[in-house]
Amino acid sequence: MRAEAYQTFTRAEWAALRANTPLTLTQDELASLRGVNDRVSLEELADVYLPLSRLLNLHVRAARNLNGVTDTFLGRPIVGRTYVIAVAGSVAVGKSTFARILQALMARWPDHPAVDLVTTDGFLYPLRQLEEKQLMRRKGFPESYDTRRMVQFLADIKAGQPEVTAPVYSHLAYDIVPDQRQTVRRPDVLIFEGLNVLQPGLSGVDGRPASVILSDFFDFSIYIDAETADIEAWYLDRFLLLQRTAFQNPASYFHHYKDLPLDEAREVGRRIWSEINEVNLRENILPTRERAHVVLSKGADHSIAQVALRQL
Image (cartoon, rainbow, N blue to C red):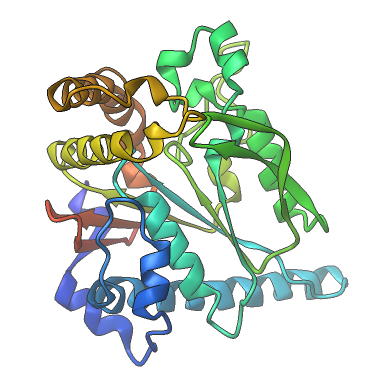
């Protein structure tokens, strides 16, 4: 990252910015929010998540006041608008756990109790379409998403539509769930989490850049960062754990991996990482890091060791 664009804090320096923000999650609540191989502790919540939730609360309040100024100028009733937070980062870096914990913490602030979380997985093309487009080995890459649908979803959220729906994705089936929708009803805050949410936009059919991109609708953005070798290790650990658990379910898309010997399963996991996920990280995800307002950098133990706050 460009050093001049960010102010960097050690974990201890960042923790001091918590002020008097209370810890409102219990150990049991935290355990229910963690992913299969994430190890977020209450200490990390206090040191990293609480200062961040305080910063975001201040931003939400400031945005609400600014929106009120515009409404007053235009002579219309002052209405609350959804504050949208984007969360980006690689597969297996811990985005989903981070987003769930952030949702739980922010919903405990009295100023904005309605906090929804939507993931971009639901906007992937269904398997049938990915197969037709020959994109199965590009699943998770920018072109595997229905970007127009995502843009329309966010535009409707920002326009204050009473109800906006998003498709639902099943990690077990590895596909969109037919006839199932997630309904969002004018939340105070929306957390929008996904691999490529900070993409600058795909070119249209005429080769020109998209006129509207996802980040046009974001009020704040967070990137979860780590060394590539560490993310690969976490991905492989998760793959081997899922092989012993979720892949055993006959309904799992990856059920055919359930009986692989350990060495073969490890080799399959490494191949999927190197041929798909690492390529996506290097070509598409990592280049968007400097578009984020905050970059949270993890150490090899999966804990957040450093926080960078964009100044420019």
